[in-house]
Amino acid sequence: MFGRKQKPKEPLPWYRAKNYKGSLTEQEKRELDAFRHRETQGGRHPAATYSDLPNEVQMYISKIEVERYNHIQDRLVGSTFVVSAIGAFLLVNHFGWINPDYHSDWALAYGALLLVAPWIYYPIKWRKNADTEILLTDENIREEWEFEYIVDKRHPDE
Image 1: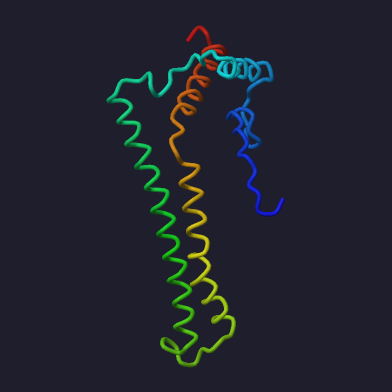
Image 2: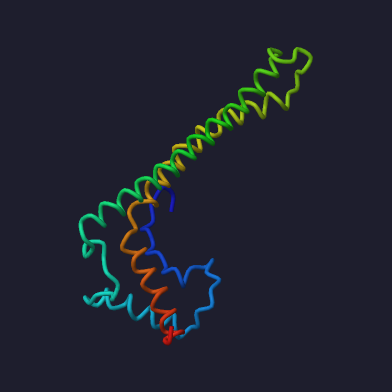
């Protein structure tokens, strides 16, 4: 209810997500579900895991993931500063430091909103990015294996 956090739901596989628009048949989806269900029964998915990879490959993947995470957070910081700068410009313009004949209440309201709102949104989005962009390497490896499995099954002669 109020203030109570719900347990995070287990994410759906890529082929069961609401935004999936691929051409997998229901039978193929059930096959992939069977591979994933093995893990819940103490078995193993046929795809390699991050820990199965050689150390240098693990380090390379980690480096790429850190660079991607930094890029996402840098874009967030940059957009926050740009929107705040636009708000500051509107406020400066409202108080007559750029154009002394322009005193709009709308410019004051929008300027204040654009100056403050990004700094309220920024920490919320920062935490969300930090929570969601944490290493999903095993899931990504599993997904690539499943792509290859379906393609090989549909085109066995290639």
